[in-house]
Length: 193
Image: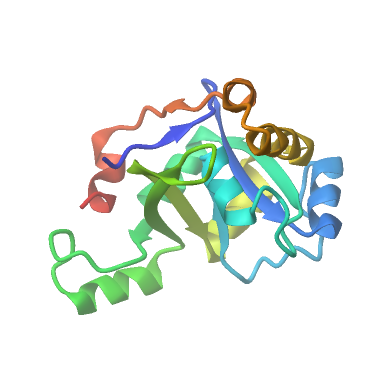
């Protein structure tokens, strides 16, 4: 199933990223990415906390030691989805492979649906959204959409410690509450296979 789950309010959605401390801590301190944050490369945002933990190894992988919860506007999130292309060719969704490649080159955002993860970071039978932003989308993300940035590295470490001790119920109670994110069908129609 392809459905977005996220921590959200009436006006915002929270996504996760991980950075080296020099970027992550500065971003959390000021609420903006520092000048050394590279605007010219694709940046991937993830609404799933556990998928982010899988990707960054609970904040232990090199250059991913600082885990950020980035609260962005719902309008920005929907804009990115509407202006995105799947990162891979799907015959049922694309006229042909050449058309897909042209869409991919033009789109300022791309989508991957990867298996969601459980507390032990094992794959679950449903998919989680990964949203890559480049060009106009990355600029809008950094300059317009961000409402707040929180360093959640201590939370990641606490949950990871509990998982390591086998205290899964306690760990689960600390997870951010991620609920199905309400989107009109037309927002995801071009992204579901």
